[in-house]
Image (tube, rainbow, N blue to C red):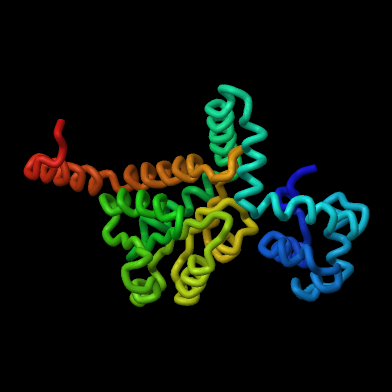
Length: 283
């Protein structure tokens, strides 16, 4: 049987609005849901108990007990890095298999990315970025590397790109000047940091647009976003792979550079002259 969270994500688009409330609660609070009965889950999701029962049936379970059993079997696996390390060791223990397995996982993630994000959705993100007064880029913990890369390249083609930096003052102070015509790009993968969500929520309240790069349409950030860009990070090991998200970011940067072609050429020419002047590179 599929991971319970994968089952929920796969069926989410076809669910009723009430069932989506339950699905969202389960996806974001699976550890807590493990301890609750169907009535308590319904109360948490602000729906009827019958809605919970119907969702469980739609997911392929014959009753609530069977559903709870599946959660019990999966919850530790989904959220414990120690367990994930143990599982990946079993998968990859064959000599010579690690390299191929990781590459195959990344290839599958990129293929899934192409099927998940439509040209229309991708172009919507590009258009918002190109027309923004200011662009704020946020990624915390391991997502910071992706945020830095995106902000670093966008600054050559767009007028005002601000990388929100943890540890250098409070991030809320860095977004005091956010306006309606600004855009926040927030990068957040499971396990989702509360600060990323809180910052995105505050910026959303200022009527700025939010573009999310995340791993599930059920993630807290995706539900908040005007443009959710969903990309898988799963590979058969205890860490997440950012190969597919990096590919998505490369596509965004390239598309923006082509739309801002004249400015891009001018900026890069000036940059090359500066490199020569300061002898930045050895060769």
